Image (tube, rainbow, N blue to C red; front, side, top):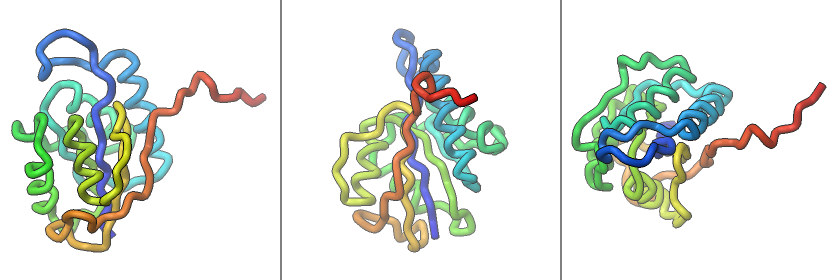
Amino acid sequence: MKTLYIARHAEAEKGLKDFERNLSPHGYRQALNVGKQLFEKNVKIQQIWASPAIRTLTTAQIFARQIRFDNDLIETREELYNASLRIWLKLIQSFNDNHNEILIVGHNPHISYLVEFFTGDVFEGLGTSHIAIVYSSKSWKEWNEKTVSLETILKPIDESFEKISN
């Protein structure tokens, strides 16, 4: 079984050039929260790919730290910055079949289109720091339109509303 974790970067600060925008304080909390959920799911990510934009790479690094993945092994390519569906698909179909769990971190709207393309399901799109978990028994090169199933979408949990138990 192949599992792909399709993530949108966490919330970014306003201003600066788009490529250079850092995560906002809220965005850091979002990424930490979702990274914690990944850790609790006991994921075994073998590879992480991310856009090299600061907000996207930082999100990938936060997720990586949470799941004990070496940040130095995160792969980036310039073409993943605001990559089209075609570019993401080409990358995914080139993945090594020895890797069964891979995380990608990108930008909307294309990262959300990718989920819709693979699953055939229309949805409201990925919010900041959301991760769609999709899977298939097919090899990576066979991943294509409507060949993948959606397991779930991880979203940041507002921990300020959690009950405190004594």
